Each structure stands twice: as structure tokens, then as C-alpha cells.
Amino acid sequence: MRILAIETSCDETGVAVVDDGRRIISNIVASQLAHQDTGGIVPEVAAREHLRVLDGITQQALNEAGVELRAVDAVAATVGPGLVGCLLVGANYGRGLALAAGLPFIGVNHLEGHVYANWLYEGGSPTPEPEIPAVVLIVSGAHSDLVLMEGHRRFRPLGRTIDDAAGEAFDKVARLLGLGFPGGPAVERVARDGDPTAFPLPRAALSGYDFSFSGLKTAVLRLVRALEAKGEVPVADVAASFQKAITEILAEKTARAAAEHAVETVLLGGGVAANLALRVEIQKRIGHPLRVPPPRLCTDNGAMIGAAAFFVLRDRGTEVPVSVRSDMKLA
Ligand code: KG4
Ligand code: ZN
Image (tube, rainbow, N blue to C red; front, side, top):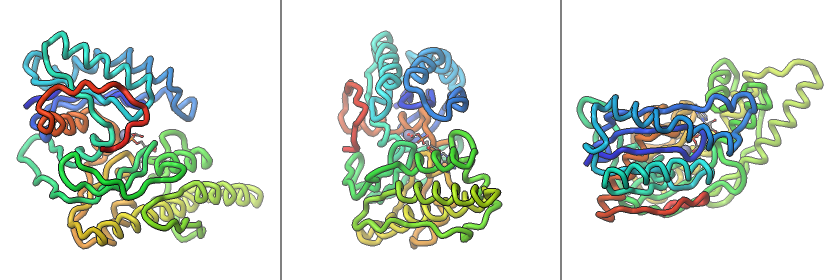
């Protein structure tokens, strides 16, 4: 089963060819660096940019895979959650391709994509499939969800953020420290030279598995203003202290969920899962090896949509032309 998969939910245009939900044949991602000027994403600009580059990137993905459209078995695209204008561009383009080639179209939930990125491998021999049940932490620019994966495409929500997403907190702290956009990789880079114990920062003690990051963000803002008033801001130390706090909060609840539900598999997904400090904090607290996709498969890409689409098709056995929904949840 060979799937051509399209991802345009936010500011990455991704197109991939994936075999049997696991093997990446090609995976092209174009990031919209234009946002670096505005320090954030302008939805209309992002949608227009997807429209401008999508056809070329699709051709590139097919060329690199060495296949023609009629040699694939289905076309998939993200239908939510995400920016509605951006979703419409990718979903309508994918639907059009499927219609023209007489192929089934599969609408994919972006969050399922982040989960199924853990099933992907490139070239060579396949990696072992993650075992289910699993506890999954999805941490991206828009989501911080802790879920119990009870079976393929069967997700039980355990907790989520009640305010900012983890990636959003990274992005805001990065902006405060003058580190540019996207903030996560920049914070991680400068934090390497900093002292994570330099500044004590609050860890909101919510009961259950929900997260809250707005108090932490405000504490960093106050800290930076106070340091500015005194003179120079030790950017690396602030970044390292913030990263330590946020990764500890995420790791503590993830490990607790794995212990409470007695699961041996912990999976990560979403852009923030690319963060090495987060992996280290979680691994410290769990008894089994942690599964995390390589960094380029943590951030948005087409291959993860191709992986999730395979399991949708296997499940439903037919075309799934879901309409786009900006607030779609995990099933
Ligand atoms: O999954 P993703 O590419 O897009 C969404 O679905 O939102 O996640 C993007 C988010 C951004 O907030 C970015 O700052 C964050 O992931 N991110 C990171 C790292 N790489 C990307 N955060 C922390 N450390 C990283 N290395
Ligand atoms: Zn994402």
C-alpha cells in the first residue's frame, strides 16, 4: 500500500510517499522562513504560501520516490486540527489529485500523524513496531496532550494543557530573549551553554494529568524584566532554567501516566519532542527505552500523515473524505 501524503496544517508544506504506513520513500518539507520577519505565523500569508509551493513540492516528492501518481494506491491530506485556510489548501489539492487519478482520498487527523511518526523508518531494514498499549505525549506549537493509546487509532485522553501549548511557551520565551522564530530549537541551542539551576522557576502543581505553562511564562517575563533593570540578561542561564522547568513538568506527568497504566511503551511526538533535554528528563524517569522519532519527523511533515493514513485505510477499508476542522481532537 503506497500513499502520497500532504501536510499543510500550519507553516510547513510537506509531501511524502510512504509504503505500508512505515517506510519513507520520499519526504519533502518546505518551511516558511518568511515568518521569521513577523516573529509568528500570519494565517493568510501561510495559506497563500502553501498554494504557491504545493504543486512543485508534490512533483518533487513523486520524482524523488521515482513513481508517477497513477502508481500510488491512495492520496492523503491533513484535515485538522490546524489553521483552516491552510488545511483547505492541502485537503482540496489532495482531493483534486485523488479525483483526477481515480484514487481513494484519506482525510487525516494531524495529531494521529504525530503519533504515527513513531512507526516510520527510512531505507534499510524496518525498525521494530512500537508496542501498544502506550502512553503518548504530543507536544507541538499548538498542542500538549497526554494520551493512552489503547489500540490502533484508539486514544483515551489523560490530560492536556489548560492554557499555552509547550511549543508556544518555547516560542514566547525565545521572543522575550530575542532568539527569533521558531523558538524551540533556538532556546535549546543557547541553553546548552547555560546553568539550568541558575534561576528557580515555578512548576504549576495541577492535579491529574493536565498541564499549565502560562504561570511559567509570566515568571520568565518577570525574571527577564528584573534582570534587565539590573543590567545584562544572562540569556543562556535563563533559557536553560526555563527548559529545565518545562521539560520536568512534561516528564513527570508522562512517567506517572506510564506507571499508573502499567505500560511499557512511551512515545513522543510533535515539534517539542525534538528537544533532547525533554527526552533525557523522560528517560530518567521510566524503566523502558523511550521511543521518539528523529527530530525531522517530530516537526510537521508529510510522511507522518502517510503513516497515519495507512492505519485509517486499514481500519476503515475505504475512502475517508472528512471535511476540514480546525479544532479536530484525537479519536
Ligand atoms: O509539530 P510542530 O512542527 O507544529 C505544530 O503542529 O504546531 O511543532 C512546532 C513547535 C514550535 O513551537 C517549535 O518552537 C517547537 O515545536 N520546537 C521545539 C524544538 N523544535 C521545534 N521546541 C523545543 N525544542 C526543540 N528542539
Ligand atoms: Zn504538528
